[in-house]
Length: 179
Image (cartoon, rainbow, N blue to C red; front, side, top):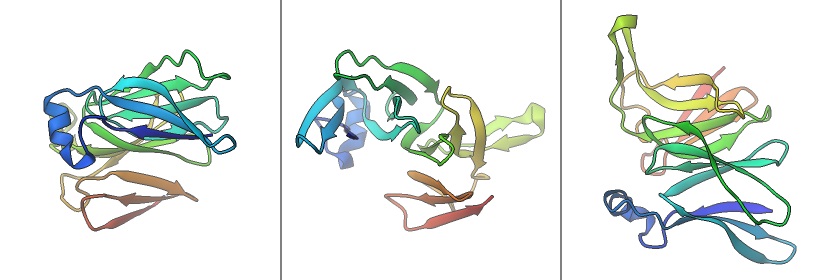
C-alpha cells in the first residue's frame, strides 16, 4: 500500500497562503493499492496535510497537518473503513514532511515561524528546525537552528546511519548533521 496526501482540492501548493488565510480544509489522506491499481480516500477535511510516514510495524501513519500545526496519528485497519485520527502532537511551528528512521522514530521538519523561542529563565533561546518523536509523541531530540538563516525553510529531514540530511523545496541547500 502507498499512502500520500492531497494538500488541497481548492488551492495549488504554491497558493498555500490562500489555503491558510481561508482555513481551507479540503485536504485528504489517500492510499493506493499497486495490486488493484486503485486509489481511495482514507480521510478528508484536513487543513493542508503535508507529509506522511508509516510506522515500522505498519500499524499506523503519521500525517503533518500544516495549517493546524499538528501531527495526526491514523491507525491502519484492514478493510479501510473508519479511519479516525488522534492528535499525536500540537506544535508551535508549521510542520512539513515526516520521515521515519530505521528504529521506528519520526523526524518532523519545522518549516516556518523561525523566531527563536525565548527561554530567558534558562539563560538561552532555542530555534527548533526539526524534532524527533517516538511513536507516542514523546520528544527524543530537537535540532536547533541557532537563530541563523543557514537552515531556513527546512522541509525535509532524513536520518540514515546516524547522519541527518536536511533539505528544502524553496532554498538551495543540503544540510548534513553527523551524530
